[in-house]
Length: 269
Ligand SMILES: [Zn+2]
Image 1: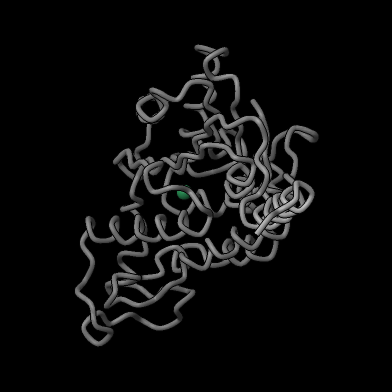
Image 2: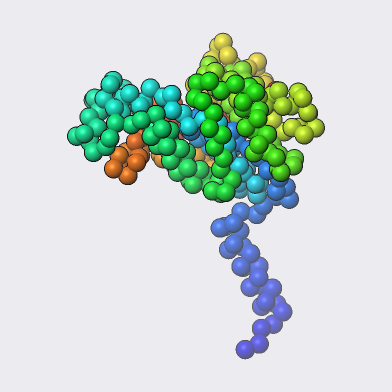
């Protein structure tokens, strides 16, 4: 069988066109970005579409969970101490097929949700990092050290985390302040710093950044769908398999907002 040059080129073009649908054409920049979650779920609630977007652009995306989120009130709700508004009836671990959750177990459950969400967004497993800081007690210094530990060996890396101004959770604010502080200390090393605003605060009259300082990132259909599917991971209820829907028990109204509009609001320093 002989193949003419013309046929060969046509075949290559067709193959390239087919591949482009599977593997989006990447931009020249393959530099790294670290998406920093104070708790497992912040990456999905505040940064999901942006994570999918950076992966589509060919960036080396890393995810860092500062804490395992063990301080959540959801542990008590799952153990039957209180009724979770989202669930609506009191949990009964014995009847529902699970042992009451220890602090360690709730952290493991939350990190499983985080991993499942990152699977949907497309973050490689080798690029996921857990800092093990204490939930509810994240300090600027602790977050800075955790970020440096991951960024070591990643030159020219970008840092994305929750806002240092448009938020009310002290851990979120500390994460944002850590990134801001790194930029103040070494603006060349940490030149690319972005802060994401949870939808809770998009119209917050007190904490919302000054007009013009924050903007909604455009996201294409695939990126939006991936962000929505990441949200679904936080609603998985299958206690015999270690899935406790912790995220949804915790902030179901916020997940509903993100699933309705998964774009990310971003600001700089
Ligand atoms: Zn959080």
